[in-house]
Length: 208
Picture 1: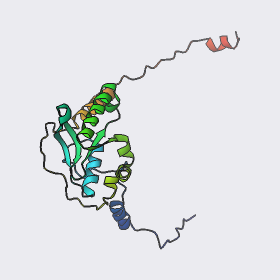
Picture 2 (picture 1 turned 30 degrees about the vertical axis):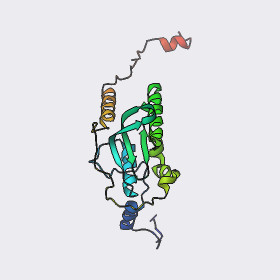
Picture 3 (picture 1 turned 90 degrees about the horizontal axis):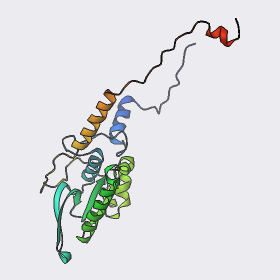
């Protein structure tokens, strides 16, 4: 039988679907596309990077900063993921694997204590929270929630002051490469060849 398709006047055309997909796509989810491929960084770092640019927030990305606490004569230098000088905010993107190790937990606690004592408001954002909904993290922070999403691509990254480590994605690429090699050289499961034995069926049935 022929198939009849009822005409729907509200049905979107292909061009309109493409336009809506570009202008109304949700940021911070699986369909996220990196708009800054030339900038080195992990996927969660790049997602935060994009949000800061699109919201018009000035920031330093992966710069070394020196923190001083005069009361105890302490001077420490750390490479910080994001420094927002206007809001006096530091954002550290925490990878769930590396930052869950005991030694890393202790060093992170020490580092964040120095940030706070030096007068900075430090935020630790987990990579899985960023991947899940990066917009929610911005909305949950009062100092950042007031910045509306303006959607412009004009970079608000401030000039580099000091950056010793250029590429933070090298470790992830190395892990992925090793994983690919493990999959490539993975041994095949052992297969057992079955051999028919004459008279086994008749013996099992009790037939002579």
